[in-house]
Image 1 (cartoon, rainbow, N blue to C red):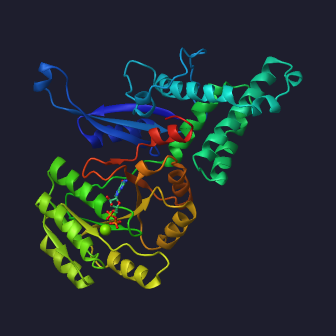
Image 2 (cartoon, rainbow, N blue to C red):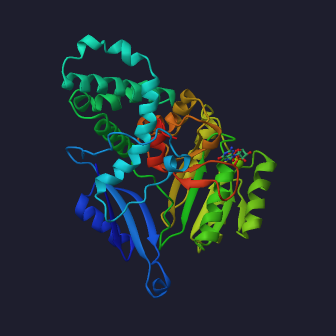
Image 3 (cartoon, rainbow, N blue to C red):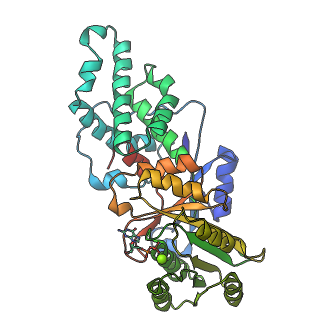
Length: 397
Ligand SMILES: Nc1nc2c(ncn2[C@@H]2O[C@H](COP(=O)(O)OP(=O)(O)O)[C@@H](O)[C@H]2O)c(=O)[nH]1
Ligand SMILES: [Mg+2]
């Protein structure tokens, strides 16, 4: 995989540069506005920097340092999004990122006993076969780490199988790790964010089981768009099952000084949206429902399809990272065929294993988007950081 940064005056131009150079399949991994530094920067305008990745036929061979200075992973290092240094080769960025991960893995690897069982000393005849055996043991370790993180065995096997050719070669452990890391990042794909339209109001529906954090997530997003991006945001709730549910969103709407309405029918949705048609963004909360209840499912289905072409519509399925894998699969199944949707994972702070995020991505094939990691509105919300999550799935912190 190639990772490169592109700078231009606008986001579109930077993305175009990335696509021109890396091809139309390039994955945009990060977009940020770069403010000019220093006092003279005041007179310059900001530029937009896009980090993009694309797969290449042969993976880049990173040259990791042979002997790590320390086996201790700095906590903040492990989760930090990489700051790509323009002066350095792109591959060295991956090296740096994998370095600390590798150190941790090496430490764990040294502690494992299976390695000895699998490789009796007398079998290690040449340097080359030693390297191959090391690779196999290393792959087993990685495989174990993925299963511990609750990556579905099926997907862990799939990922390992894809690296089989390299694993059996005399390539270094570093090379394999970097290959796995890159492959997994591409598997996660580019997380989707709510993008507002210039011409039409964007109406975003939030669906999903009860108690996963739909209303709280809406409050976080409303706050981000209204306070940070200075957009006109309106809130609507169709969750009339519980009085407390309407009051919860009403309270957030009051705090944000955003228009709020409760709707009891499809006609009321149309009428209320009409009232805020000059707004940039309308977030619609729905009643959590059991994916096993066909009638409730049908109600949601109608809600998602009742608005006409004068609105841009989008749906987010909200799932909790703490839900059992089997239930997550059932929920995703129950929504497939409804409409196109993206997935928001909530409550990452309440679990230490993130395998389900990868499992659900690979099972459903739909885009992941935001994640939430706490109850604080608006702070505990961010776009899924694929690099950080892949690192965790491979045993990093
Ligand atoms: N720990 C944690 N709790 C959350 C998160 N998001 C929401 N919650 C809590 O989950 C509970 C249910 O949230 P709510 O938004 O009412 O869920 P809804 O029924 O899907 O609308 C509330 O107590 C929220 O504070 C999160 O990311 N982490
Ligand atoms: Mg709710």
